[in-house]
Image (cartoon, rainbow, N blue to C red; front, side):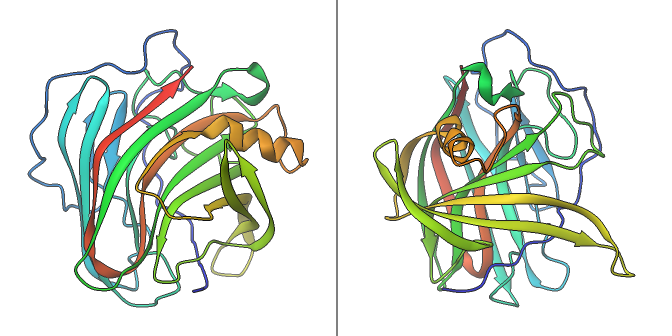
Length: 274
């Protein structure tokens, strides 16, 4: 298994305040054409309440590109894709082309119905069907990235307290941050739970921020899943790894690419905030 390295992600400027509005999450606008500038670094494509983020946070010392675009959005389900072509260190992530719902170093939409406090009894679930194309052998995963804060209205400058990754598929030795704690079954699916920590430092070596990272790695790869994200988070609460007073502030879904050329095609993606 290839070692996994993650660094601080370039923050987005806050465009709207956090909100937990009692409005339906899945609002279906008309189909949207592919964005012409989908290959621009950190370009976003709005499909309210989601947006697509061409997130190339780890590309500083790499060679390549990432493109992320929307094909259609109907009946609350997004059909979107991200293509990639990266070379460089096989142990570090170059990009995370992803669909974002909620906070990502700021808020871009007020209709997300997030945050959700873990002890509120409200469930956050997601359905995802996707296909992986590898033009060259690609070190990658297909995963959710779920963020938690200890307050309900984090701003762009507020660091998360916890991060939970949910790996549905991994290729060519990609491995998560941290060390394996145990194998467990949640929702009828077997997962390997890894526990680690992000530590960011400035040029002098001073720690500027840190947070816990919990990774659920599916024991068997899949290309289609219905995932109870709050159910996984509550598994961490039961093990006293996370506080039940935490607020789930964001659900992101995409592919972390280390090296390789290919594409992730999400034929149907949606999140339901209950």
